[in-house]
Length: 434
Ligand SMILES: Cc1cc2nc3c(=O)[nH]c(=O)nc-3n(C[C@H](O)[C@H](O)[C@H](O)COP(=O)(O)OP(=O)(O)OC[C@H]3O[C@@H](n4cnc5c(N)ncnc54)[C@H](O)[C@@H]3O)c2cc1C
Image 1 (cartoon, protein in one colour):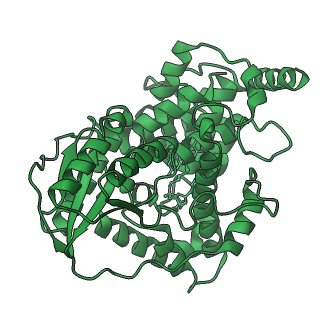
Image 2 (cartoon, protein in one colour):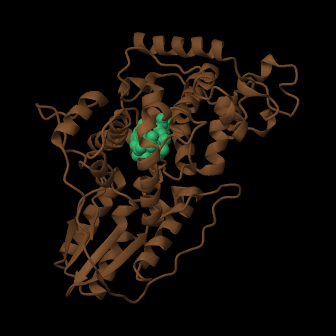
C-alpha cells in the first residue's frame, strides 16, 4: 500500500522502506499480493535497487529502520482506512518516543477524506451534493518532481517473497511507468468517448487505472490536472468517476464501522439466506445467467471486472440469491487486483441498498436486459463463457431461447429472476414495515 512506503531523510539521504505487514498480507488474496510484489519490483528498479523491504509488525520495523539510519523524520502518505489509521498512530507514538517525527505527506486522494463537509459540519452521505462540494473545495496541483534523490541503504533488508499470480489469472504491467503509459493512451484516445463507452464491457471503454490508483502508482491529482486542459462530456464524466472514489473514502473515514456493518443500521433486520450452493455457483460463474457468469469469470482470469458487471453481479447475489453483501465483498477483495476497502465495500452496500444509494426505490438489476443493453452483440459474454461461443450475436444472452443453447455444457439457471425479484421486494417491504 502506498501508505507503507516510507522515506527517512538523514543528511539529505533517503531510505526507501516498504514494510510487508502480515495483518494485510494474509487476507489480501493472491491477485493483490502478486500485483503488489510486481509493483514493488518496479519501484525497486526505479530507485536503482534501493528499495528496502522488511516483513513484520510495522511499528517494530519502521522504528528499527529509522534508528539504524538515524533518520530525522519518516514520511508516509496518510492512510484513511480504519486499520491504517490505527497502525500509523501507533507508529507515530513509537517514533515520537525516540524524537523522530512521522510526517504525513499528502494522501492517495485529491482531497483528503474529512475535508469536505456540509455547511453545518456534517458529512455528506449522498454522492451528488458531495461532488459539488468536492469540486468547490478544489485541490492542489500535483507535487513537483523532487529531483534526484540520494538513496541510502540499511542493514537487514529482506528479499521480496515470490507470489506467482493464481493459475489462470493474467495481471497487467504494474509500476509508475505502466500507469503513466496507460493514462496517456486513455487520455489521448479513450477520454473523448468515455461518457458513451464507459458502460460497455464489450469495449475497451474505461481507463483501467483502478489498480494503479489503488497501489499509489499514479495520483488522482495527476489525472485531474490533465483534465483541466480538456473539455467535453467525457472529461466531465471521468472527473465524476474519480470523485466516487473520493466520496467512498470520505464515507468510510467518517463511519469506519461501515467497512463491515450496514451503513444504514435498519438493514440489520433484512432477511438473507445461508445459501452455500448458490454462493458457490455465483463465485464460480455458473449461475446460468450469461452476463453474470461472464463477469464472475472475468474476475477470475483478469483480477478485474467492468463496473457495470460489478453492479449486476452484486445485485444478483444479494437480490436474486438473497445472500448478504459481506459474502460478496469478501470474494471481491480476494480476487480484485484493485481491491479497496472503501470503494469495494461501499460499492457493495450501494447495490445492496444498505449504503449511500439515494434512489427512492429498491433497485433490482435484471441480469438479462442489462446484458442485452450493455453487451448488445453478446461479444463480452462469448469472450468469457466458452460454452456459449457457438451462439451468435445477442443469442449468447439467452441460451434458453435456442435449441442448441445448452449443447456445450452451459449450466441451467439456478433461480428464476422474475420470481426472486418479487421475493427481494417483499423482503424489503418487510424491512420497511419493521
Ligand atoms: C460492487 C462494487 C465493488 C467495487 N469494488 C472496487 C474496488 O475494490 N476497487 C476499486 O477501485 N473500485 C471498485 N469499484 C468501483 C469501480 O467498479 C471500479 O473502480 C472500476 O470498474 C475500475 O475500472 P476503471 O479504472 O477502468 O474505471 P474508470 O471507469 O476508468 O474510472 C476511473 C476511476 O474512477 C474511480 N471509480 C470509477 N467508478 C467508481 C465507483 N463506482 N466507485 C469508486 N471509484 C470509482 C476508480 O478509481 C477508477 O479507476 C466497485 C464497484 C462496485 C459496484
